[in-house]
Amino acid sequence: MAGYPKDSPQRRIGSRARGIVRYAFSKIGHWEFHEATGNDFGIDCYIELSEDGEFCNKKFEGQIKGTTNPKRLKQEKAFSFSMDAKTIIYGLSSHTAFVLLYVDVNQEVVYYLPIQDYFISRPEMFKKLDTGQKTISIHIPLDNMVLENDFDLVQIAKSTYVDGPTSKLRKV
Image (cartoon, rainbow, N blue to C red):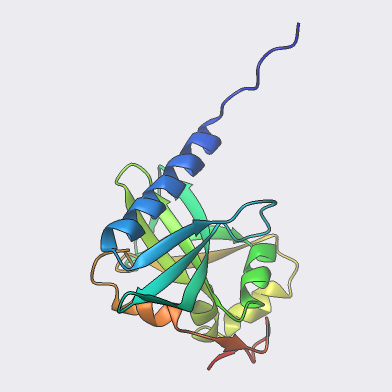
């Protein structure tokens, strides 16, 4: 007789992280969380902004990563996270903002990092994509928390990008 499927810590952490992200945006009130369905190519969710009670197609794509042990950098006020290079390239190719949502599931805090803006402000990072590395270490500022004071997230949702995953990527 075959056994039943086994549960795993990774599945539990991922499931909790998705729930925490959904709750963090819903409690702000002017965001709508849409979970992506089907095969996961890098986008776990779409988070859409409502302004003055209307949805005007301002949103960002989200990649949710949960952890029980965030890796805080001693030298700077940031977490370090090793992200798959393929996922970064996929995100950089989007005309819509692509945001890493890094979730400390123990503290139930969501941190965010807009990937295109991160690379635009650090042009040297584009070279790492050409080296064949499977993962690239990125730094998520501790101040980038999903909170009711969400001016930066609103601006991210209104962002548009052109020119794909090259050092010429720019915000319009």
